[in-house]
Amino acid sequence: MRRKLLLILFFVSQTVLAEKHEIGLTLGGLLSQDRGSTPNALHLGGGTALEANYGRRLLGDHAVALYGEVHFLANPLRTVTSANTGSIRDVATIFVTPGVRVKFANGKWASPYVAVGGGYAVYERSALRINGTPNADRYIHRGAFDFGAGLDTKLWRWVGARGEIRDFYTGSPAYNLPGITGGQHNVVASGGFVLKWGE
Image (cartoon, rainbow, N blue to C red; front, side):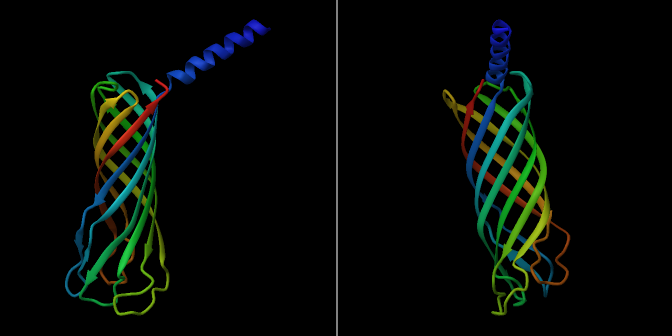
């Protein structure tokens, strides 16, 4: 019985060690954009993007590997400007999008990848509009779909560098302006570090 238990523990430990985990920590910028048309046009400014990504290898080898991932993005502030003073002044953002990532040349010095996912977006709108009147509902909850591509490079042992571009497509955060509805692209370019273990 003891031998069987030790054998089972050995195979379980080998399976755990064979799993590959990654945590990416990146800093980037959400690109600015213009939406709507006169007299309800607005300019949504760019903003800082603080991102974290956890990935776990599900299938594959050093040629091509499939990862499950959870991506998190937080943006503290993007300024909104508009000639229509009924617009909100600014908006903050959080995206959480589970998904999958396909990595090529996995384990090599440079490993490009593509990713796609879907999840949740929350927009926190400014307490006041441009004209100084209060907003009725500050928090807007939307679905989110993200897709993008990036490149991981090795730096030292289990530490690497990561650069990527993603687009988070969500419902509109509600600017209080007629005619601005439907979806919104939130494109972010970022770079940072990736930590790997369990190979």
